[in-house]
Length: 297
Length: 292
Image: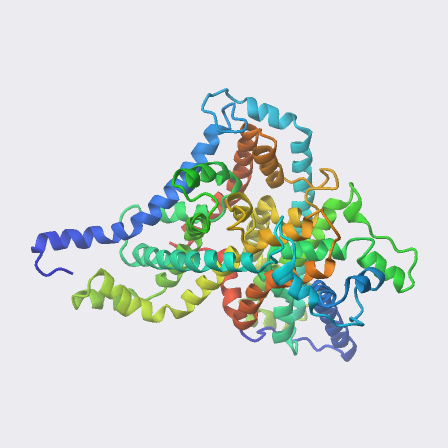
């Protein structure tokens, strides 16, 4: 760098420079991620309403939260949505990957078609599906025009079924991505093992259930972690598709947090719901990252 | 991706046909919403109301697109989506550039200039990728107000840089970890310092990972809704927020054809990136999913 510096100072600079380069990022992360987590955690213990307040009141907000019908609805919806979303995406992704892995002509065309929804904003996806599922304009209307008069599909207007339309749109968006993960996993399996099993006369079914699918366990785990954390964070899609409705029928923790914090002036309750969301994600991500980071060293 | 490595089974013609039928059926399923949006964005409103969403337009009109771009009512202003499209670009370009540059340097330090505690720092950054952003919304609104950039594009740039850092660092770290240490050592022996080693040895071979990172950041930031909805005011609103305002506004006639044209406009930049460089897009997704 500067040749005029005495050797010792130069050596010190060499030592310090890498850490100096890393420090702005580290500072940003410590402040905007961990500092903010602590701040929100603190607010969840205060009597904050419209504006943050620093008067501690203990765990009142949490008690309040678990007494809110809306929160319980949001959790129940998250359970329905999360389980179906993860299960359907995994099954669909696996099946598509296996089918695509049969030396398909045109794979290069099909694969991008399966995957492109992942490049779209959830707002775009929600807009498209909101209309597609609208009984008066979308699928139901089309079926009627095609002569299937008795066809009804009005889930998006139905309080009990609306959450399943969120599943439909979310699966459409993410299943291609899961397919790509499984496809990469399938291509990584040693073909010698497969050939040997085939020689032994293993049927196609048992080849897949006994040999291939068990080897894909790491992919299942990765897919689960990615999908679960997307499910817990799900916000945009619900806003665009149903805006939480009809009524509050498609409320999820993310929409609950937003409306309690910013429109209902219950910031303390909103903060406590955010803490619960963080805890849910951390319980999935931390063990995963821990094992991933340990394995590779 | 590599060609299929699996032995293909002696499949009958019928099975083969069924296989292709299923695969094509799924392709139709994935394409259908896009098809419906495109087809109905060039129909007149009367035709949409009276007709079938699957049918091709009887009268082709580009009017909805012009409306969506420059005339549609967003909030109270009949500006169309164009100012918000520009807002998104003004937000995305600096946010992607800064977060990618920082990620590259972080990845370099964390792999080639290791020091005690670097793994903990990386772990902290990695976890930051996954936090639910609800946990930072309240303090972020306060801090943006305190430093005087609340409701501005600069504010959104800061937000996206901060919450993109984890991923960009992860991408570069994993890429540089596979870069042979011997070359770095040789450069150091030749007297190359910290920056020289980076710019002369690592950067020239970082092309692929830069592309992956830029695409990943571009897609994520362009598609973001939560931060835009929380921290932008009317003049800095990004495209996704403006689109949602357009589509969900409850006043006046619902102009579905304009909504579709707007939705396609909002999707276009990321779709183009995906079509042009899908390979890198997939690599980014994989790298984001499979850590190490």
